[in-house]
Image 1 (cartoon, rainbow, N blue to C red):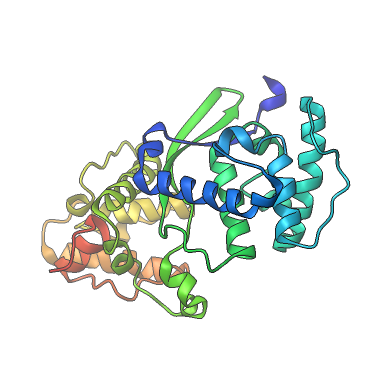
Image 2 (image 1 turned 30 degrees about the horizontal axis):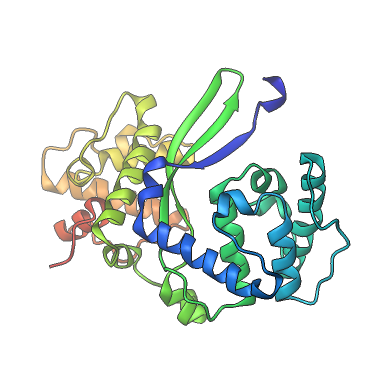
Length: 295
């Protein structure tokens, strides 16, 4: 097990496989590959089972670009498949303008292991680069589980991963540079996606405050007095907020307001700008932490 210590793996949650938008994306990518490789008489039926040996990716890259690779046509053994994938993915990454392969969400190991998440990231990146006019489902996020091998065993952590970007980003990339209210963007999502994000936030909060003997079950209510928010900031940023600087057990609206104001000041000072949150506004607190829709 020693050779695997420090290794981190991200896997799709089984429940995400039932996501209609994910199934739609998979089918669109399969159709795109089959149309692109029609002259080669290559037919893909499964992203997991048909791309792991490098054959499809090899022909796909040559058809979409001017690249000609010197690799064997059919790699039968696992060693040959890994060697072929290495050559193909290096060429793909070069075409995509990727300088640091370590930052990629795909790798030879993952693709050869039939990892669906890595395969999706790779194909979406190729579509975005080679055929950006193809409209893939936007704002697609999936639930994932992150596994890390340590000396004490395997640590698991749930999270959310973005597969495709928002339609607004694709339509107007420059608009991405403009300041937007992330809560407003979040509230445009489907209720199911909002719930997924809420669960991820709750998991993040509890992971950081549990060492203090605290547990959060209702973010909108428990964050209202600013206490847990301040403790969370201290835990995440790695510093201690003196207890005399805020009310640990606030009993009045004034003390709660002071706590929340201090928390927002600390966030702003850490370059985490939150200009649209009013510490005195109940609506702001509910929208920012409870993710309640605007009325």
